[in-house]
Image (cartoon, rainbow, N blue to C red; front, top):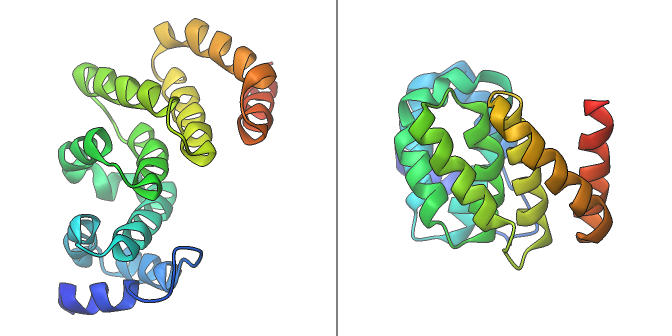
Length: 172
């Protein structure tokens, strides 16, 4: 199956639909050799294809993050440069699930902190989640992230307040 096939499966409809991305997750988990094609879709000219590819990759990262390890440099670069909100919120969740070197961790934290200023509440909420996830593997991050979560639980958007409260309750 060529990338044109994956692109076709991801295309069409509007941004409120994930289309066939769940089907693609199952396909790629069964046949990981299709992953490079899916990764390539993150740079498609079509915003819907990019969004759905990011959705599929985020779902793959939940089940088999190790499949994405060889792409982490590209994914980190995408995280740093992405303007599309759907790419940002999915990368905010994917990157912390990958084994990162110290310099990659610093880059991820910098991007996630920048995402906290995004105009999208979903991007901000996913950035909180990503920072909390990273703080579990970077002990030095725990105190500042706990403070950020406490502040977000009071002053963030409704989604941020709810997520911050949930993340804080897991720490106790």
